[in-house]
Length: 264
Image 1 (cartoon, rainbow, N blue to C red):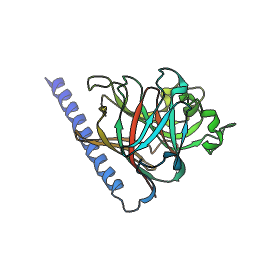
Image 2: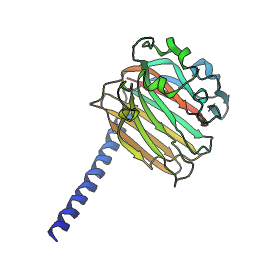
Image 3: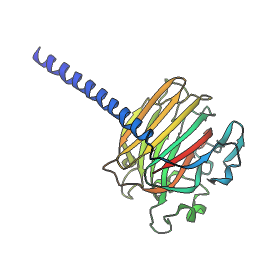
Image 4: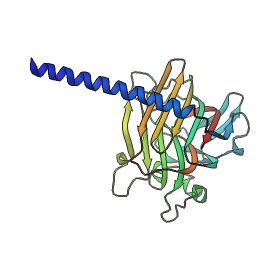
C-alpha cells in the first residue's frame, strides 16, 4: 500500500509540474509576443511577385502568386533530392525574431515535412561562406544534407507525415550544423512533440514563431483551437543572424500568405 501511495504521489507531482511548465510557457510566450519592442522588418502578403523578396533553391519547384497567396510546390517525385525546394528571404535578420504567417497545406502526402528555417548562415567551413547566397549554386539540388551539415540555423519541422489525425505526426526543433562524426539525431532539441500539431489539408492555420536567446516557440492557431510548442535553447550555441527559409520536402505543397517578420 505504501509503495502504491508513493507511485500515486509521484505521478501526481509529474502531472502538476508539467501543467505548471505549460502555464509558464504560455505566460512567457504572451509577454514576448505582445512586447512593444518588436520592429516590423518584413512584409509579404503573398499576392505580389514572389521574386521581389524571395529566392528559390531547387530547379523543379514552382511558386505561383494569386489572391489566395503564394502557392509553393515542391517536385512530385518521391526520394529524388532534386524535387526538394527551399524559399529564402532575400533579407537577413539579426537578434531576437518573430515570424508570423498564414499557412494552408495543399497536398495529401503521407510522408515528409515542411520546415521553417530561422536565421541561416553558412558554417564558414571551406566553400560554405557565412552568406548562404554565395553558394546557392550548390543548392540547386536542395538535398537535406547540404543544409544540416553546412548551415548554422534553427529548424522547426511541422505539418509532418500523415494526412489523418490517427497517423504519426509531430512538431520538432533542430539546431544545425550536425557534427561530422555524429548522426542526424544529434541535431534534435528536446522535447519532440510526437502525435501533436496535426495539420489538416485545406485548412487555414496562423503560425507564430519566436526566437530569443533562451526560448524558441512555435504556435499554431486554427478553427480547431490553439497549440503552443516550446524549446529551451539557453544552453545551445546561439543563432544571432541570417535569412528565413521555407522548405517543402518532395511531394509537399502549401500556400503562404501575410508573411511578416519582426526583429529587436
